[in-house]
Amino acid sequence: MREFWRHFRRNRLAVAGGAIVAAMLAVALLAPLLAPYDPSAIQVSSILLPPSFDHLLGTDALGRDVLSRMIYGTQISLLVGFVAVGISVAIGIFIGALAGYYPGRVDTLFMRLVDIMLSIPTFFLILAVIALVGPNLINIMIVIGVTSWMGVARLVRGEFLALRESDYVSAARALGVPAHRIIFSHILPNAMAPVYVSTILGIAAAVLVESSLSFLGLGVQPPTPSWGNILTDGKSNIEIAWWLSCFPGVAILVTVLGYNLLGEGLRDALDPRLKK
Amino acid sequence: MQPIAAASQAPTHGSHGPPLLEVSGLTKYFPVDRPRLGRPPGSRSQSVVHAVDGVSFAIQAGEVLGLVGESGCGKSTVGRLILRLLEPTSGEIRFEGHNLLEADRRELFAVRRRMQVIFQDPYSSLNPRMRIGDVLEEPLLIHGIGASKSDRRRRVTELLAQVGLDESAASKYPHEFSGGQRQRIGIARALALRPAFIVADEPVSSLDVSIQAQIINLLEELQSAYHLSLLFIAHDLHMVRHVSDRVAVMYLGRIVELAETETLFTRPAHPYTQALLAAAPVPEPPQPGAPAKEPFLLEGDPPSPIDLPTGCRFYSRCPKRIPACQREDPPLIELAPGHQAACILIK
Image (cartoon, rainbow over all chains, first blue to last red; front, side, top):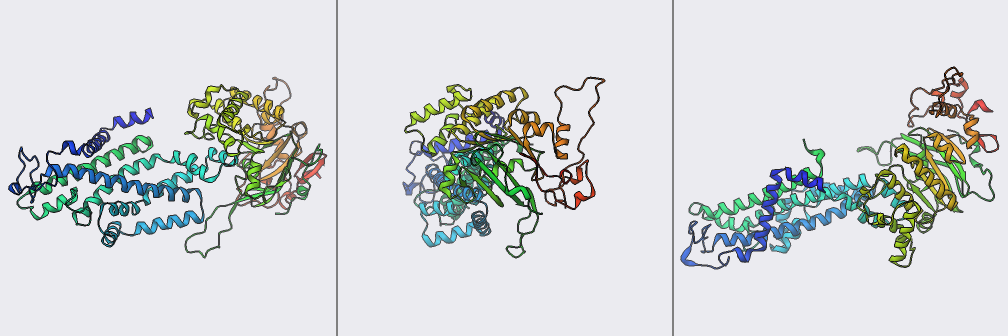
């Protein structure tokens, strides 16, 4: 653990990523305190105002404060990221653990399922499913979750394949420890390191997918603010109000970058062998 | 490959009543090629590693049987097959009246209480994320020993004391211990269920020489205190001589010689055993001027266990080979009561 911190701290980009992630979390949690205006308060007198001291990031076509909307949008983006990745990691661990612990039919079945899932263009699958079940927050989180577990499943399977041959697992089997207990209390805790990395990187991907969906109008529905749907509003006014599309775009970029830097930093710190 | 003639009558040397463990015709082949894409299903390639090929022996209650041989001869596989950690290809294992290969899950679970294992590498045999107390408590919990948590904790303390560790060890993680201490913990885990039989798979090979003696002494103490039977797998001949009542020598998946320890070390019958003994370092080198021992060292490597030679498996390296050895695969035959060897020269 101490070793881990030493490696992690030396990686400045990773620390920067961690700082971005922490800042975003703080913004999401403290949104009601930080937002200067009510994010859905329409003010006809101040439509499409450029950034000023009154409205730091300007206002949109309905006179709503863009900064306040983006602060509340942070909540949505992170909520979708966390819950969707939570679902995908849970599925991935379950399938990967079974496939890795039971070589043969179970393994073949699950890994072919992974291959099939990976061969489907995920984003279009998500679009199609959302079009069918209707775009709302819960559906989006579930659909992103059940279409993005394959990487985790493969990672966990790989770890299990190696760990199931280790002596302490053999010792547990010789003691008669039941399979479910070997899988969950002996192997899984030792197989988690790559899953943490994958979780962090997965959040970045989920944030991006949610923004894309919202941008296409199939994500979080207005008036609930999300970075994606603020961006959509900006699209129709892009010639006259650059701030509407610029700031949410930058927010998405910085967030995804932050998670990716943190994730890669974690990977290097957890596995120093990968370092060059 | 012809069946071993003596296999059916596994040695019951010095026995009163049936042996504790009886292994006969134990065989394990590992397939080396998996079915490939494009081949019709079921048409596996025929290549197999003959890891264990018709091994038979018996162990009496309270007896220590040494099992020696070069790396890769299949000695660890034998241990794992007996423990049912690997599925044998064929053969029979009888333990305390149970036929282990036909035992159902419940019967096997009951047998696991009587049969335990100590592994070679103390660094990989303990779960790095489990406290020692939990490692030792788990078997008790699973087999329903001890009515309460405090009962089980008392037993854990007792186990730690038996292997010379302090009570405080229970709350520590494996990485806080040295190799020798970890091996003590491994022994404590094996003892937790009060087994009758323990497979000790090279229990000291990865320890410092200074620690080896301590661990061996501990094992011997516990063995006599609990009247344990041991299958002591090793490649250090001096260690085996010191610990074992009888010794079996393996070469390429077969037992080539089996005898009482003193007989095996003083009157080895099989050329491979003779070569092994000659190759072992001598604690006291001969004085200058004393007649030098005839060098009798093996050259080369054992043949591949995938493509076994015809005839005797030891032919390619045997210093005493004759042409007939290439034609006949010698069975394990009894030269004297309790002394068996597989070589056509000793008929």
